[in-house]
Structure formats: structure tokens, C-alpha cells
Length: 212
Image (cartoon, rainbow, N blue to C red; front, side):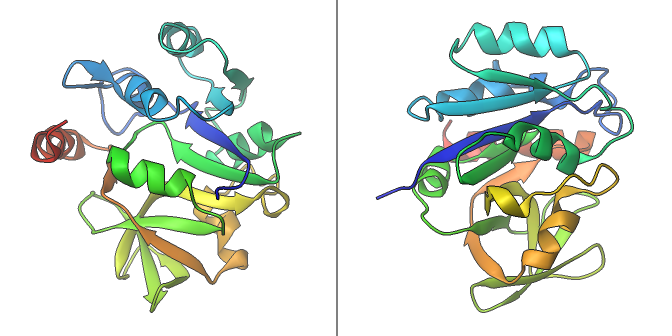
């Protein structure tokens, strides 16, 4: 049986490395923006919170066309703060466990469902494919460290975390906030995030391979 979770989708960032002039949650993947594809996989989750900042009105409009019962959380300092700040803001008065998901991440629907059914904290990892990846060092099925230099997998954002482990650290990425809680279970998922144009083209190819 799954446990109650609050799903937090971080969509506040500028996405400057991709160079498309829009927040990455609105990137089109074969006819649908990423945020729509994510929401379609979260239909049965009651508490979904979306952190907005850059192009907030466009994100809100796109989300409300798909689903009305969501909570929008504003990260007004999105240009200077990093991912952990958005997750912290959305975690206030949330369920005991937070499932975090970046707005630029695509996950195979079957693996998303497995993540949502999880009952113990984990970090989601995948085979290394993205440029400038955050790598995960593992010991059997446990994540024991994050690195930019070496690791067994790539961390692409999804994680199930106790709410109380998420602290306000505006200058840190989420993986840096998670690190003191390691080791945590690794869950290998078919997924990737989109930071560069090369990542985007690979994502388009991967969706075709998945038959989605």
C-alpha cells in the first residue's frame, strides 16, 4: 500500500542553457508540453503542488487547461535561488513525505507509477545520458553520494523524501540538501532531464522508443 504523498513539481527556473526562451516545463514533446505529460500521470494524486517563477502566467494557464485542483506556489526569487528553495517553499504544510519532480524531466509512465507507489524514501536514478549530469555513487541498491565527476548512475530529480529533511537552503541544489540523508534507496527509472538542445533531441528520440 502506498503512503500519502505531496507531489512537488519545480517549474520556476529560466532554463537558459536550453536556449528556447521559455521555462522548460512548457517544452513540447511530440505535441504536449512536459508539464501536461507529467500531470496526466498524476491524475490520482490528490495533493499536487507546482512551483512557478519565470513565465508563471504561461505555466499556470497550461496547467489549468489540464487540471484545476492543483496548488501553485510562487518562488519570487527564482532567478537567484536553486531547486532546493522551490521544494522547501512547496513542502510547507504538506504530507509527511514529498515526491519531488523537476519540470524538465520525462519519466516512463510505468516507472512513474512505481515511484508513486513507493513506501520508503528513495532517489530516482537512470543510466547516464544527459550533458552536465549529476552522478550518483551507489553501494548495491543504496545511493551513497552525488558527484559531478564520477558515479554509477545519473540523478535526474525524482525523489521521495521525508518532509522534515527538506531545509531552506536557497543557494543549494536539491541533491546537496539530500546528501546528508544518504544512504537512501536507489530506484532505477527510465527517465531523463532536458538541460541542453542535445538532451531535448535525445528526449524526442526516447519517447519514440518508448512508444509514447
